[in-house]
Image (cartoon, rainbow, N blue to C red):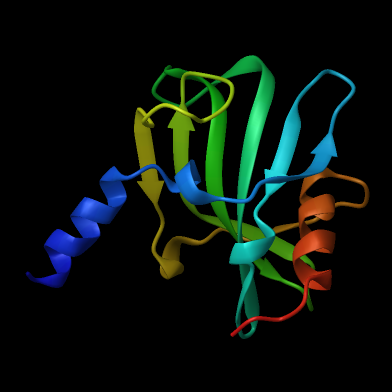
Length: 136
């Protein structure tokens, strides 16, 4: 089986199915962000991690579709304190339990790094990912 078909099959599986989610940040409005400590990896100069967000109110994608939860792979440059998103899955339900209705994969050349502003959601993610024990 060639690599294309293996990748296609893997993309059909929800990312959140086998994760060990831990709360990293919860807003007063009820939005909760989680991370999976078992999947924080080092790929110098970056570290990658999977996060899951359950939103108190629906959010809207550029195409007008609404979602209540998302699972994303983030890329963190701990030295520059910047974060990019390399993969996203969007779900209608608040717990990312059902199959996603949309997936977006961004190749490395399309990563858009943003600074993690102090006390922002991105800053909480950066702090957790950069302080985690390094895995190859």
